Amino acid sequence: MKQFKAESKRLLELMIHSIYTHREIFLRELLSNSSDAIDKLYYRTLQDGDTGLNRDDFYIRITPDKEARTLTIEDNGCGMTKDELENNLGVIAKSGSLNFKQQMEQKDDVEIIGQFGVGFYSAFMVSDCVTVYSRAYGSEDAWRWQSKGVEGYTVEPCEKEGHGTKIVLELKPTTEEENVDEFLEQYRIRSIVKKYSDYIRYPIHMEVEKHRQKEGAENETETYREDETLNSMVPLWRKNKNEITKEEYEQFYRDKFYDYEAPLRIIHTSAEGTATYNALLFIPAKAPYDYYTKEFEKGLQLYSNGVMIMEKCADLLPDYFSFVRGLVDSQDLSLNISREMLQHDRQLKLIESRLEKKIKSELEAMLNNSREDYEKFFASFGLQLKYGVYSDYGQHKDLLQDLLLFYSSSEKKPVTLKEYVGRMKEDQKDIYFISGESVARIEQLPQTELLREKGLEMLYLTDQVDEFALRILNAYDGHEFKNVSSDDLGLETEEEKKAAEQQKEEYKELLEFLQNALDGKVKSVIVSQRLKSHPVCLSSEGAISLEMEKVLNAMPNAERVQAQRVLELNPTHPVFAVLQKLHETNQDKLKEYAQLLYTQALLIEGISIEDPVAFSNQVCSLMSE
Picture 1 (cartoon, rainbow, N blue to C red):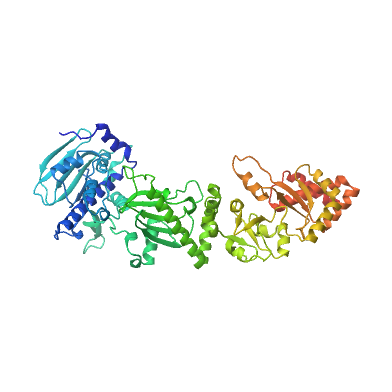
Picture 2: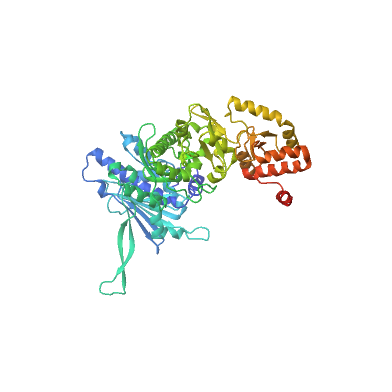
């Protein structure tokens, strides 16, 4: 028995037990090796001018044997000589595929999957003994390589028809911890091939057991065996777009990503040069049920030359485009030794950057050319775009701001910031917005009366992140965002400002009394210039608005914050005259009315009141007078 030409037996143990996270990977690795072997033979015959072989002659076969508990993988590729068996399989981490690729003159045209020389040893994760029968193309001799793991290996002459390699795995016993028998089940083999090796370019055959009605016997069936091709071979994303129908794209999406609804948009793109890749991306029509939860895992499927390397590669998508589903196939990415993880490199960042631009371009095209589809998309994923504006300290705001939609008070539908600015009045400087739980609730807020009277459009913000996103944006096209509930909108004429100053002075004592009666609950009490039919409302001063206060205080384990509240009174409302009279005749009753009006303003704003019982008693007391 020969010893492995490696640094130590520990290296092989590491290969078997530590490098791969999923045992099923062994089949992907062995099938990839078979594909490489066929590729080598195919390219060599092309170079040598050998016309006796073509792609249709090649195959890979899987044969499970439950009785013998063996799994066989066979190909009719280039095969190996005795020296190649010793050099490729006897030296751990030496890759014959990589050597072959380096020797080829036209390296860019050679798509060899295996480059590390360790994939073969993944077979020992499920096998007690691995036997390789191989005969090199053009050779009369065949050789058998056999190993039971770290002890070493033997190489002996054997009989084998035809060129190629046959690998026989003698599977380990099944235990309570490890179900190795699953790799003898046809359905399991079929699912692994479909998952990882569906797009290997050569057919992967397996003889399967099938049933049919017995001829001449209505209620009897007979069993027969038939060859089945397990893989699709030609990836959809490598075909020309004009060869693929919309129905084929949609069926691929449904089958691959388990969505019963067709995608809103399909992005089929490729690039060559610094980063070479093919990508097939889909924008779903609806968000998955767990999309806005911690359990959702973003990412694109990653393939290397048609072999799936990662189910969810998060690094290919920015968070704000995490709704995109699809895959990327590239031979340029630097993978780690097990091909299960990506090394963070320049190619990866280049691909992510190009996909980001492509996705944004597709969303803009949908927004401009298919508004109904875009609004459907935004209803599902618009929140994620808003989070993208707010996250990373506004780093992505310029990229995303033109994709945002907000409900318009005048248009009665979602509009873009660009559309809002395009309709602004000539003398209008700011973009006005107001926040609330829903459009219906916002419509009833008294703060909106002044802007309605002046015919000014407002954006209704109904998502919790909306106001934070606008704060990050700060302005759009030179126009600042102005909260309708802020204390100063700057809409008064000079005459109105002068009248406001006179009222402030005229009612100074009453307003100060009311402020003191509220005992620090508000920063000030003022005469409102915005109220028309309502008696009272709340506004705010400073960086934290009333809506932001509600959002921040609803967060778990958050420190309580409070906006600087301002109580605004309508001097033209009959209630104000009652307040004036009580200030002169019954200041104790006026204190009760101050509390009542403040509580009323809180309820209008949707803010919880501290003492509902006290409020109820105040109302009852008023009713009984």
